Image (cartoon, rainbow over all chains, first blue to last red; front, top):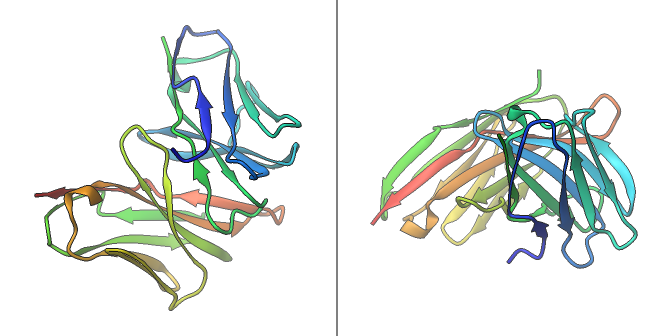
Length: 114
Length: 113
């Protein structure tokens, strides 16, 4: 157990729907990062939050949004889902905003859009 | 264009057969190179950070080295439990002066008993 908790582990939904993925960072970590992983594109950075504030944005689609709450847990909202959104979504956390000592990843949420 | 390339894509070794995985990069302004291990169905697990050419880090049977253009992950006398995908990521400063990680696609390592 890495200390980063992601729920749900698996999600199957239809095209056009909206889902919410949840992440609880490791105790004491202030930064949360969201990643998408597919077989052909590898890990793609989506967005980072640090202590409740957006810190960096990657290749996140406009249909996707995220937030970090006062208790530091984070949610990733995916809407108007398309077949191509099927992927593993990982959350990672780090103590600082820089990630100099690496990130701690959760086990991921496998999203299947049918 | 900033790019990270890992080779080989897949590697099969016999237990005890040492080898190296390669991570080559073409980026402007390296701010660290990271190695992770990923087991099937799990998130990546942090192994090493390297910052400057000539730097080396070791952990059990793994040793990571860094030059100005590439990094190697040397695996000495591997065991079946070393089977995993090894990911390399390079951190740079983007146009907005923010840190950005660029990930390679990984090397899938299988160690046969």
